[in-house]
Length: 239
Image 1: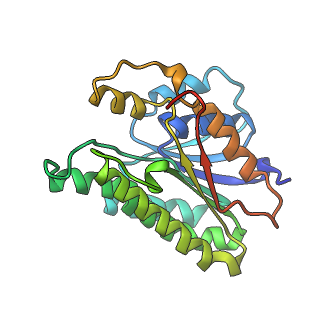
Image 2: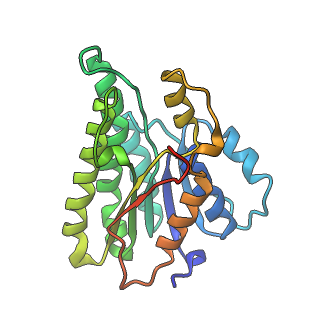
């Protein structure tokens, strides 16, 4: 198993949902982390509840802005080694194709696909050097689609293609690339989805984000000669 206390990682979308859960879990493990997000209040509150041996670095960043993203990531990568990258940032808006706007499409594409591509590309030299791991937190919408979900699903299908190609390109450099296709997870994003459908929200019906975090931890701890390429995680509570 890999000793994660000797590793350095970067997590996007670290301030909410699965990103927050894996950030807290890895801080507990003593991992050196760069955490990307826009508002760290909730995350900092959660970190106050645990013993923090290796304080994370908070990088305030709107990843939908490519110029700012490039500037901040370039500074970070010049000064640090990066052993793993976890893409957890995501944006969703439910719309009929007929009623959706180009602004709806662009907003989701910029966060869900373009930013993941840009940050990965910028950090690849570091990750190749460390023979590291890249994890794309995808969705079952990256495997199929449903009504009102066409734009979001198209971005997640694109993310799947990006990760699959990258995995094959990076194999000779011993860089691991994993896609995790999550079902319905108890997150603020899920609350937004249910609200848009006029459904009452019952968190117990959805996958606990902390369970996804544990899966990610297990992937990061795998020995160097084992890769999980794709994993689908579904709940058993009717969602």
